[in-house]
Length: 76
Image 1: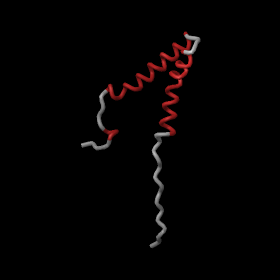
Image 2: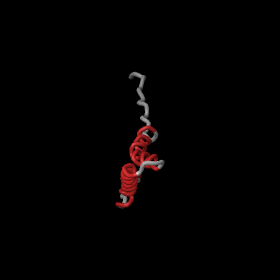
Image 3: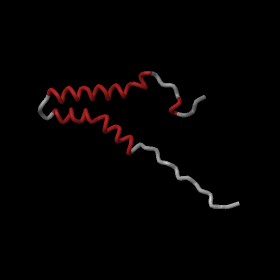
Image 4: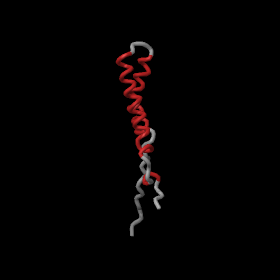
């Protein structure tokens, strides 16, 4: 029995759903940025920046904290 969360089997939907959503939103943002020249351009800029924002969030906020190494000071 596998008890670790990341070692459990996942369906294809669970694996590829969010990357597909992010890719579709980014692609829609790219097309919108090329075709629109008004306030909606800010939304398209946000859609294009979405992968960068998600990556920065996981890099800075969700990075695992390294545990300090215990050094034994007693000598035998």
